[in-house]
Image (cartoon, rainbow, N blue to C red; front, side, top):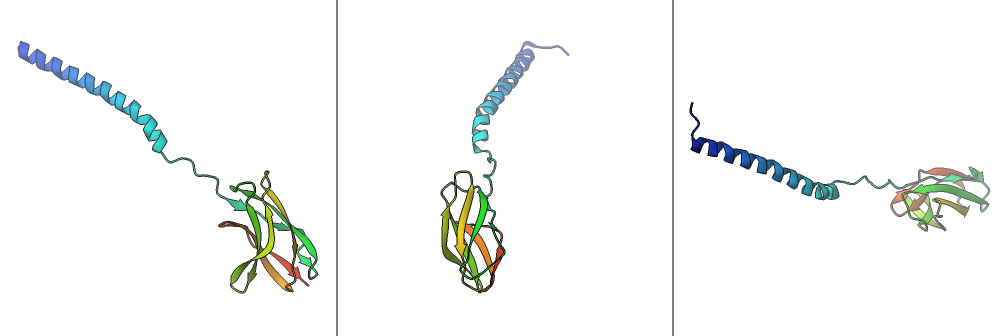
Length: 136
């Protein structure tokens, strides 16, 4: 098979177009990389969580006790509110304290409702696990 001038120009043109495609694809890929990185999903924020531990599990009516704990994923100064289960509803009690800069809180509590009290600490939509204090 004889290679003609026209055939060799065609091969050269295909080679140039191929090389340009490779260079252009590399440029597009490198230009797209920052945008793709910016739009890529970021690591999820730490899930908010609250721990709560009462200083006692049984008290006399209106006897002072403390609830202490930590919170993650919440800002310092967030309101930490004590809630009590009354029937089927959680009711916020007038026991509120701010979250400290180290993610800890301490709350003084007095309860008068005799019997087993289901309690939890809430901040916004985040709640601690339920804990119990019996008032006698």
